[in-house]
Image 1 (cartoon, rainbow, N blue to C red):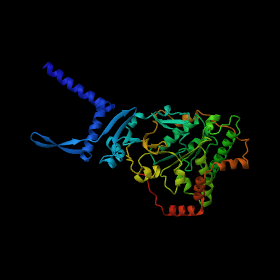
Image 2 (tube, helix red, strand yellow):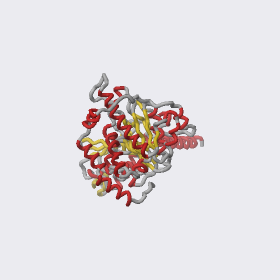
Image 3 (cartoon, rainbow, N blue to C red):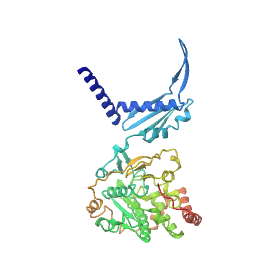
Image 4 (cartoon, rainbow, N blue to C red):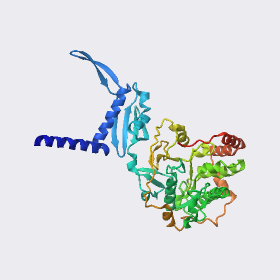
Length: 435
């Protein structure tokens, strides 16, 4: 009886160990993934069967295609050999792996005769606390091991419906950028971000009326020119260096509820906005001027493609429809498996690589108060350019930075024909809600 008891105890302990290894991504977890993948290949006829002679006759033997699985750092890497009968199927395995393992495809690596899919699994364990998120050397760690290098991949588009965590994510970005530079805010709906206007550090930095938003964008455009002028005239001017080399703080413009603002503009007002917005987005990076635009649904009527394509980092929060994901991340990701999971602050993030990955925005504890945190700041970190005057030559210098393609984009977007068609679509469009 004692021997049986020890045997039973050993069996239960083994089951417990195997479960713990599976939960923590250990050996048995990796083994299980291999078994699941093998089962998929067999059920979908992605294996070869050959007949083998035996003493009693013949039997079918399954011959597996060559594939490899490796756990490398934080990523699970699945490599398939190409060139066989399943060549096309293996080139489309990314979305299959995402759906099977509820993971996130973050990179596809191609080598001669091989394709490797790198997945990030157990994303929620990488969630950071709001107190851990900092801007350092032109980069923000949004999740553990996931960085937005805003100096290299400038500007951000944020989409998402009510209750998805969009506002808290914007608050997080405001907090992070306030610690290293200047933040300007436009809130045309006079809601969540507008409440910051009365705090000491935000005096003159938050606008809500239409004319104020016009002036904010125009002033930011002027600031960009002044920052370029400052760099050009600096005693240590070095070609190719960005604003950080000259110890300048970043200058970030955040416009929330962009669609509510842009959809109310007539032809002349649209022209006035786009003439400064496009250069800000296309040319602001080197001078450290960045745009962050947030809205519920980034359709072409409220956010022309020329703008959306140059907001290199993209974030969606909450539950979006298939159309909502397509509008945010474009047609290049139509094969991406977007999964709507519950939970505030959960969504997707493209940090500029063109591949959206699952996101859990920084966690905000119950005892954390944004207004209290923002009240600790008595001013923004900014340079005083009041005495600097912009000459015609300075504007010519900025014009010289335009490429022909950029100039054509701007002209097309401010053309009367484009605005007329846009207004017609706005008049005809029904109000499509995000799921």
